Amino acid sequence: MKDLKDEELVNLARHTYLRLDDTIGYPVNQNSNVVGFYDWYTKTGLCDFMMDNVGDPFDEENYFVLSALGIEKRVIKMFAPYYGIPLDKVWGFITNSCTDSNNHGMYFGVKKLLSETGKMPIVYVSSEAHYSNRRLADLQNLECRLIDFDEHGSMDPEDLRRKLDPSRPALVVCALGTTFMGGIDNLTAINKVLDEVKPIAVYKHVDAALFGGYLPFTDHKDLVSMTKMKYDSIAVSGHKFFGIDEPCGLFLTRKDVYAAQTSFKVDYLNSNMAMISCSRSALSPLKFYWLMTHVGEEELRRQAKEFLDNAEYLHAKLTEIGYPAWRNPLSNTVYLKRPADWIVKKYTLAGGKIPQYDGPLCHVVVMQNVTRVILDRFIADIKSSLENK
Ligand SMILES: *Cc1c(COP(=O)(O)O)cnc(C)c1O
Image (tube, rainbow, N blue to C red; front, side):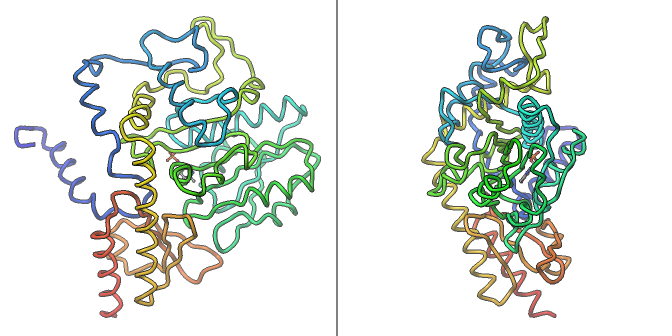
């Protein structure tokens, strides 16, 4: 850093390093899983020009030459088994972010439902789900009904039953890992309500930005299995559990969903473009590929176990000192009574207000970089704030 003359860039680097250990309120993994990638990328000289994954990774005959579309397709096929999607049925691509994945989930869902019924669907999503789903419903001009959630942050299936309109197709967005409380929508219960109320057609999109990264590497992988949970598409972030160092995401669905999309034959790309974006990053698919070939399943399994253990540790320690804190099973999010302002600021905690709980709350998301040393320091600060009252 010494010979770097640009003061602003030096300051940015310094500031980032200084705040790294104390930023524990957001679900991003600051232990990059793709460190070695840049060696390969610079040594091959590929960093000197622009590769573009423009087009459809499953349309092999029409790959753009300067792309990594072949690797992208391999990545989708590597991930399909983790989400219980048969290899001969899967279609998907790497997105700009989980919001982008959710946008495609809703857009594809609308087109699929329209093709089946000729009617526009109603979107059902819990009010604890990530705000992007409501924003996207607004963007796509969709009628959206917000469903209540229980004290664990999961969608209330009985409220869904009350609000379902059986005369219109239902586009249900299920949150697997809600943003603030780390609640998991119960797909089995939701499926039961849908089977009983029988809307004229149903499409289920799963927003699993954070939990969809690690659940496949735990004993609870069935929760994100398309075969077991009968959903139609899933969205997962690349920069949350997977530790890719820039925003990106997975979008996985089935070929029959893809086939129901409006055909846009784009002559100059010689391809049918179902994706909303034209140019897409070639780097994110390469990083996903690096993750699966150089980090691999066993290490991801280890990371998942370790951070869930650490989240349990944080919850247990806060409970031990009598500090109100909660954690849902299978969640690496611990939410707690909002501490003193200086603690909120020091640790960049994310705030929230949940009707079922008295007063303002905050949460800590125990990602791979949030070690016990950091957690012990946080707990000591909470403890001292109680003693100095
Ligand atoms: C983070 C998150 C999103 C948004 O994902 P981005 O990759 O940041 O766009 C959507 N849904 C849930 C549940 C999230 O946790």
